Length: 173
Image 1 (cartoon, rainbow, N blue to C red):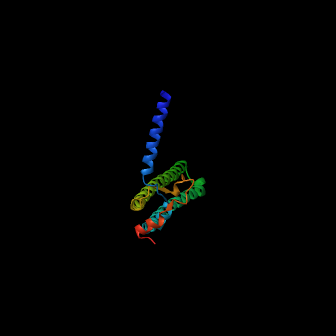
Image 2: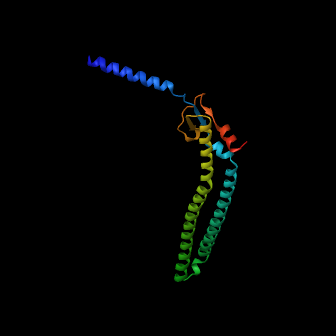
Image 3: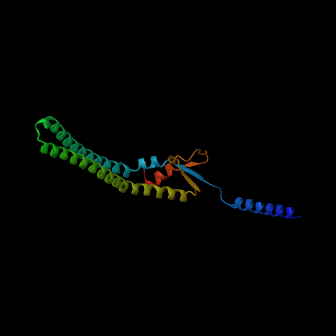
């Protein structure tokens, strides 16, 4: 008798759950390749140009410091035999200090470049994300998957590519 009652309750709950799920609106899936969207945004080209300029400036200064270091090393090797012990020690110390300055410069430059990159790209990413969310809401999508995330193993034919809709929303051709 108890087993029949458990099965009856289980059947009632199952039927109720199926009835509730049948009343819900259908799931609408969409996908986008966010990298294509971001590459198409005009702000991205401007940001990349600024980052390239900054990177070029860093490389020029780094190369200048490395040339100075190489000149010191060459001069030291060429004249080492004529240097007194105190001059040798002084020249070696000068070479070592410049090498340390180069390392410090490159470390600071790398951090500053990363910071500039974040400052320039984050607003672009935020704008793209907001546009994707707006399009999803306006078109009643349940889920939007980013095909660039690497976690999507399959996209059904019923999943709609929303890239054209988001580009239209952003005014991108």
